[in-house]
Image 1 (cartoon, rainbow, N blue to C red):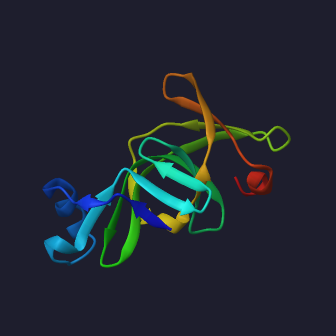
Image 2: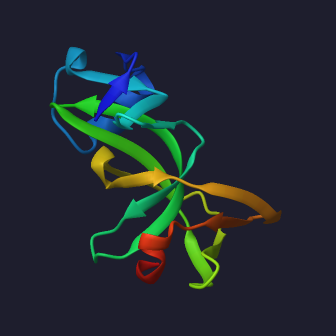
Length: 133
């Protein structure tokens, strides 16, 4: 896992990250793109599947990726699940402006999605994660 073409963080991003970490300015970088594995790329505005603290999975939208104190991080707006069809893998989520800072490794993978109606997104959950949603 790594950031792709990272840049020095803007003042706004640095100030935000300082609410979580104590680090010198030069120690913070950000990027709109991150490599999750040799075959998986995650970019700003991607809808992603996330590993949660309780072992379940959730979905959300990536805002940016960063590195601070040698930690790879992502700011993701985590969405509320409305319903999940385990047989088809279709999940409905209520979009929300609910940004959370998390470890980049908590992003499992980008998802295929479509907007159903204003504020509601349908995603296709990979078969191995359907029972965890």
